[in-house]
Amino acid sequence: MKKRCLVFSGPSGVGKSTLVNFVLNNFDSVGTTVSCTSRPPRASEKNGVEYYFISKEEFDERVKNGEFIEHVELYGNKYGTLKTAVSDILKDKDLCILDLDFEGAYNILSNNLIPNFKVEGILVLPLSIKSLKTRLMNRRTETEEEIQRRLDESFNAKKIASYKHIIFNNDLEVAKAEISKILQN
Image (cartoon, rainbow, N blue to C red):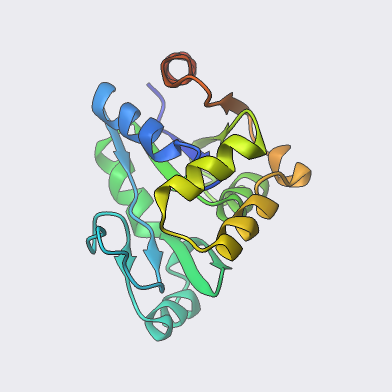
């Protein structure tokens, strides 16, 4: 198998983390990166698991030193993927999974930011904005205003065009089957 990166992206609450975990648990020689963020951890989050939680000053210093493949500022917080995170995975694994927001994924997919490997984008979408809003509200981790901002960002046509694969996650088993087919190609 040729070494490659799959960039998973989609609106918050659409189930992309569930699908990423499916890939990690059911396919060999796969690893995923842990992004850095300047936002504080939520109650259930642990440093080095969901994110590396660093200060805005440290984040800016790492940007200045060129340590990120991609980085963005969203909702007043900074997020980024370290170059070493991807290269460390691809030393030992055949597939590196990146679970990114739209902006970070768009930056990688449209600017060839991982030039030595095959990189494909998988966009995970809900069947409707209404179903996405319900998922976000049921998480109870964001305010109404934050939910609306996330919904507004979710369907940007320019960014959607940069993905090779689009999966509608209405039925989890169907979505898993579609991802399995992508991984076998």
